[in-house]
Length: 160
Image (cartoon, rainbow, N blue to C red; front, side, top):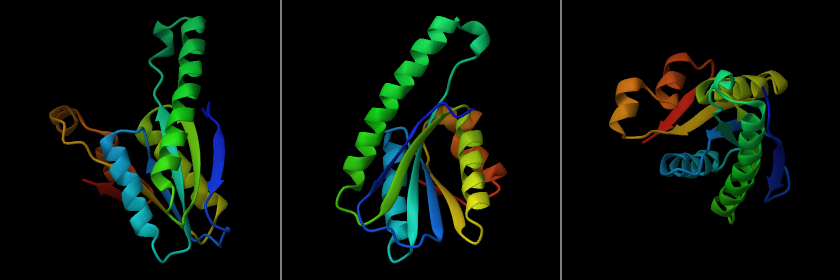
């Protein structure tokens, strides 16, 4: 479910877009590297960066309605902060970009968002860009990057 908001920020006059880079962004070092890589990938191309924060809500069965409401309010605050951080990171780069956020499983939401862009913009190329973590737990249990690399219906760039 989409529990988030979108904020559009464009640093240049909009040009025709034929490349959409969906960047998984949570403010972490891997996400920051992914956003930097997306900027480099757009150099010389007509495209746009879609910065997407995915908030993961624990099982609703274990939370009260009040607790879920508080978490969603926290997600709104986090999304505003992340949008500002992404804006700071993208300042000075001549790229079109938009920030959105959703709730759910990270890999699933990134794939759904990218697929939706592809459906809405036939003929354009959509690519998911995510950072990888070197944490041992992610290598053992798996991460969003691993899940995307195995299951994504669109190309995925995993930034080390």
